[in-house]
Every structure is written in structure tokens, then in C-alpha cells.
Length: 182
Image (cartoon, rainbow, N blue to C red):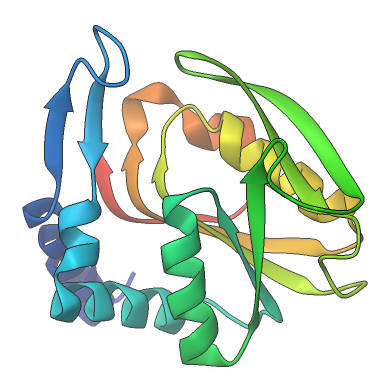
């Protein structure tokens, strides 16, 4: 990593860190939820993180946002780059024919879906989400992208909870986290 990139990485990490609100015992007792909605509410800060994501990734044809906060990031990245945006949704939220995957969360199980025709065949897709924890959601989303005929060129997250081993669940896929929390 170059000195300029390291300096930029430290600055964006600090920016994200200043906008994290910790919520104990949410969504269940014993879980420390890291809420990034303060970052989304701060226009200049949100613009800065979107600009960093755009600068660090490419080329890609489409951006896939993982429900729900990933939608916000994907829409902004798609707008900034002119790329198409695809929502990866929780079960039962999409009309029409879908691909479905069940997966484990750090505190339960869930299902994700995407339309069967959501991606251009062979498209290079950047997956985006707010937080990488155990990697189950991101791995499930990557599986859906690939089953739909596209390829995942990377995963970009605002924050990674490194102690939960999310990168391990992603089978060597490129992961870029703006802030890593140990």
C-alpha cells in the first residue's frame, strides 16, 4: 500500500468510526449492534465514503445492494458511476421469479432473493453492504449473483467486524472495508 493510500485509508476509517452508534442488546440480548445511520444522515460524510468506494473499485457493470442499508450505498455508487443497481432482498419482497438462498446469521437464520433476470449475463458486479460480520449474508448474496449469471468482482463494506471471521466465509473474494473493528 502506498503512503498516500494508507493516509487516505486512515482518514476514511476515522470518518466512518466517528459516525458509528453502538446499540447494546439489539436485535437481541448480548448483541452489540453497530448502527451506521448517522453516517447516512451526514451528507458530506456519506458523499466522502461513496467517493472512496468508487475510487477503489472497478471496473464493474452493476452494483448489488444487500437489504437494507446496502440499498443506500448501492444507489449512491450506481449514480456516481452510471452503473445499474440491483437489490438483493429478504424473502417475499420481490414480485416475479426469484432465485433464493437460505443462510445463517450470527443470531439466527434468514433468506435472500434476487430476480432471476436481475443481472446482465456475464456482468461484473460490485456487492455493497454496510457491515461485514460473520460473512453469511455476503456469501449468500454472492451465491445469488453467480447463480443469476453474473460474476462478483468484489465486496465493499463500510465496516468489518474482524473478530467474527466474515472474510473466511467469502472464499477468497476481494473484500474492501472502510473501517475494520477488532
